[in-house]
Image 1 (tube, chains in turn blue, green):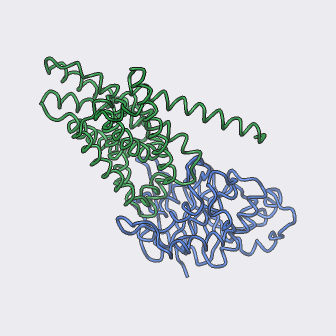
Image 2 (tube, each protein chain N blue to C red):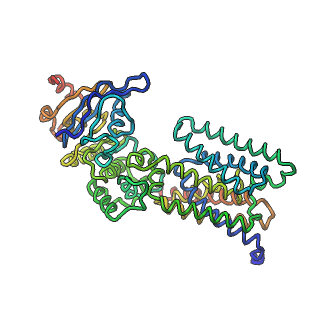
Image 3 (spheres, one colour):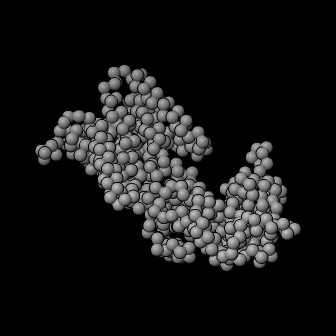
Length: 245
Length: 272
C-alpha cells in the first residue's frame, strides 16, 4: 500500500526551476535512497515532504494528508548534527524534543513521554548515555541520538538527510545496520552521497536532478547484498551496466 | 565591614545586586546559547532612546527604557526572523539609531546631563526602594515565563528548525526570549549601565556553560556566580571609592581568567 504519494510536483524559486514534474510512490517498509548531484533538488524535495516549504503545483499526500498535517507520522533527522555541541544539554533532553507539540505550550514532559524517550534510546543502543552531555559524544553516537529523537513520536516514516556525512567508516556501518533493523517496522528515506554504501541497504533509488528517475533495485540487490564482501563503485558500475531501468 | 551594612543605600544595593544577578543569570544563559549577544547589545543601546524620551517627557525613566527596549526587541525579532542573512547590519543600525534618539532628546531636555553617566555605566549605590519594587516585579515576570515555557524555550534555543517541525510556535518563543532579554537589560542597566551590561550577561554564563549539563543548571550557576561577582565588586568599589559598574565587570573578567587558567592546568595535567 502506498503511504507517500507525490504527483506532478514542481517547485521553483522565482523563475529558477528546482524540481520539475516529480512523481513518486512509496510503500510501507520501503527503504528509499535519494541520490543526485548537489543543487539537483534533493534537499528541496525533503523540505516539501516535511512541509517546511509550500508548493504551488502538483500534490504530496502522506497517509492521504497534506505534509504539514502529518508531523506525528514523520520522523526527521536533519543534516549537520555537529552544530551547537557546546550547548549544555543531556542526551535524554535532546531526545524528548522529538515529541510533538500540538498545543500552544506544554509544561514539562509527562512520565509516558519520558519512558518513551528512554525506550527509543534503548532501540538505538544509547540508553547508557542518557545523562551524558551531547557535546561529549562522538559524531556517530550523536547521530544515533538524533535518530532516537526522530523516533520519539513513533513515526511511520523516517527521513534522514546525509546521516553519515561526517562519520567514520565504522560509525557509518553501525548507522546503516541500525536503519536496516528499524526498516523492519518503518519506512525509511535517506538522502545520501555514499552511493556504494546506501545501495547495500536501499530497496529503491530515486535519482534527482531537477527531474526524478526511479530505480527499483530490490531484484538487483540479491547480487550485491554480500554483507562483508567487498563492494565499491566499480562493482556498482558493472551492476548498473546490466540494468535496464 | 559590618557597619556599612547598616546604611540603607548599601542594603538596597546588595538586594538589587542579587535580584539583577538572578535575572542576568537566567536570561544571560538564554542569550549565550541562542547566540544573541550582539542582538542584546543592540537592545541595550537602543533602550537609551527610551531613557531620552522619558527624560524629555518627564516620565519615569525605568518605564521609558522598558517600553523602548520591548519595542526594539519585537522589532529585532520581526526583522531577524525575516532576514537572517542581514542580521548584524540590521542590529547595528537599530543600535545606533536608538542611541541617537536618546542623545537628541536629552539635548532637548534643558539642564539634564549630570545623571547621564549613571545610565551608561550604572549606579548601584543609587537604587531606591521603588526601584527595588520595579526590579522585583520584572524578575518575577522573567522567572515565571522561563519556568512555565521551559520546554518550548529549550526546544527553540537548541534547534529552532527542528522545534518548528515538531509544532512549536518558534516565532512566538523566539520573540519571547528577546522580550525577556529586553526586560533583563533594563534592570541590569541600573547596576552596571547599558555599556557594560553585556559583560554581566555573558561572563558568569560563559563559566557556567562548561560546568553545567543542562540549561536550567547553567542558569542557576550563572545566577550564583553573578551574585558573587556583583557583591565582591560592590565591596571593592565602596572601599576604594571607584565606579561600581566597572569594578563588578573587572571582578567578573578576572574570575573568568582564573577559571580558564585552572581549566587549562587541569587539561594539561590530564594530557588533553
